[in-house]
Length: 145
Image (cartoon, rainbow, N blue to C red; front, side, top):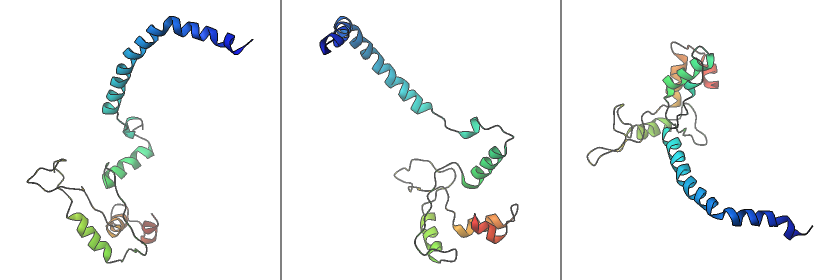
């Protein structure tokens, strides 16, 4: 058999059904685009939807959300940074200048400042939270976390 005889059935198929194939593509592409747009807009990746309420993982996750919120976070550090570094307070103060109130609009207006953060938490503050009630972790354990 030659190469031509192998491809002949495909050529016949495409030449016979070319119009239908193009029509199907023209109809399918907008429907696919619409479906993708709806999926992107309505997608919800909330882990609480599939974690059973009584599981320890759910309890841990809810505790994490209560402590840190569900927003993205940025962790800032530098070489030589320690818990007692005074620069930490200056960095935190600078960042806190851009913290908005809890009810701040997400979009700033011409008359309102642009809020970049909902919360600023320093290492020392997190350490204080871990060593205080209700966790009461020993300092060494809290530092390790």
